[in-house]
Amino acid sequence: MTQLEQLKLSGQLPTPRGVALAILELTQRENATLSEIARVVQTDPALSGRLIKLANTASHITRPVVSVQEAVVRQGMATVRHLALGFSLVDQFRDGTCQAFDYQGYWSHSLLMALSMQALGLRVHVASADELFVCGLLAQVGKLALATVYPDEYSKVLTTLSADPAQPAIEHERKHLEIDHIELGIVMMTDWGMPRVFTGPLAFYEDAAHPCYPHDSRSNSLMLMLRLSHRLADLGLANADVRPKLLKEWMTLAVELDIPAEAAGAFIDEVVNNWREWAELLKIPATVLPSFAEICHGHHEDEDAAETDMPLRIVVADGDAIRRRNAMALLAEDSEHTVYPAENGNAALALAMEILPHVIIAHVDLPLLDGLELCQALRATDEGRRMHILMTSDGNGEEQLNRAYESGADGYLPGTLSAKGLRIRLRAAQRLAQLQTDWEKDRAQLRQIAAELAVANRRLANAALTDQLTGLPNRRSAMDQLEQAWSAASRSGQALSVMVIDIDHFKHINDTYGHAAGDRVLREAASILRSSARREDSVCRIGGEEFLVICPNTDLKSTLQSAERLRASLSTKRMSLGQAEKTLTISIGVATREPGTTDIDALVSTADQALYAAKESGRNQTCTRQHIPLH
Image (tube, rainbow, N blue to C red):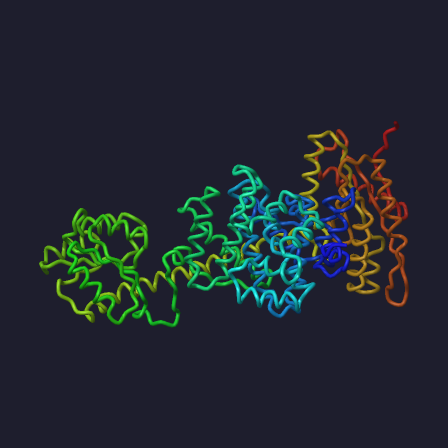
């Protein structure tokens, strides 16, 4: 027996539990339905919220998903199974016994990789965004498995890897454990039902030199997406000094997926913002990263530094080499400014667009493009309007000063200036740069608040469609569902029936045993009705002790049979009320859509009349006011 087979039989590998395990087992049945899965998902509020959030994140549809049922339908049975599995592992393995394994860092990396795969999936249409999210989240699950099964041995592997990072991790793993995380992860994901189209690229994506697939194939696109997502996750957890290098590598890889350099910043900033939002939801740490532009230009914030000590990126543009060197020497004196030289106006303009400096010091008499023209060209761009431009010349004439300001300059420097005088004139630029940094922080906070509000609004919208006592769809949701079923029946010509159910003598229960007992009866009745109803039927609470059951594609005879089954199921249930045990009974009115039924209100009204007849006839029975067709 191979080591992999032994591990699979040992029961030590990470596996889903609770609701995720129930979903996994349910989806293995041939007759499982999405409605059944939605009911199981609804028993776990955390999983419900995560699935709804993910459905909305990946959706291009304007109307947001607000219910678990809709999220499950949109994501599909297989994707919901894998999402439940992934989120279950996140909750179970937040820590462990492997001392050298960073469990929190692992999940932070995996989450960022998942969100990157999802975002790439919206640009490169090779699979659904939700499937790609799962693929990214579980791509490194073999590492978690090794840390779980071999905590002491894997801790030694990680320590050795830290001392010898030049050798790939899988080489260290094979040397010490005779198995690697890629091989083990693919076996686990295959056992969980992950399609080979995803597990295949997982075998090769960590080996950058392995081409493996035809350039224009789906598998090659997935492999590139995995590499790109892994590199972005590395960047998210990296130290500030190596981020620019990782970012450059990411942008080189991105070209292979037709992501242009000008789109990279918006893509990365959006993924990182989503990462922080999801990290808060899943209780996973996420690094507060600078924006793409700040990483790209090597800008690092120092929150404790005074604004006047803030280092700046400065371009000195002067055609005279001696003047240029003197100005650069003054700027370098007792400061941490990064200074870039430019010998003419065209070079200064190109450099400014490349490095986005805080300050440009330009001589009026620049070659090719003079200082005034350079200033006007910069002010014509969004980036240039944020730069602090200081003009300098050999003279100090009033006319030159006016022309400089008319061109859009922020200040004017005399030809002879000391280092101290220059520092004084740069304070305005430092204040501006600090204000821009603070503004970016405020904007990030506003985005975070907006994201939190969106989540809260979705929760409120979901709550607005759910009866809080029983967990069933409420009257509003019931009417929406019935309207949809009515439209579907109109298009297809299929039957549509409803039941209106009333708990017998409920007022007596409330008056005799109190409202707490009445609430318990309602919850118990709702639970029995939900578990006893057919998979395709929808059970809703429409008010008080009344319930509505929507039965699509069901004729009157079949609905009466189903209603009798519900009534019988409830009548076998005995509940303790006070000192006595009572049997719950219900009365049911049934109606089906007929040629003369004008709308859903008329259909429900017909069922209401039948319910009234059932109560008038002694309760605990099923009635209809319509005739069953003879066949």
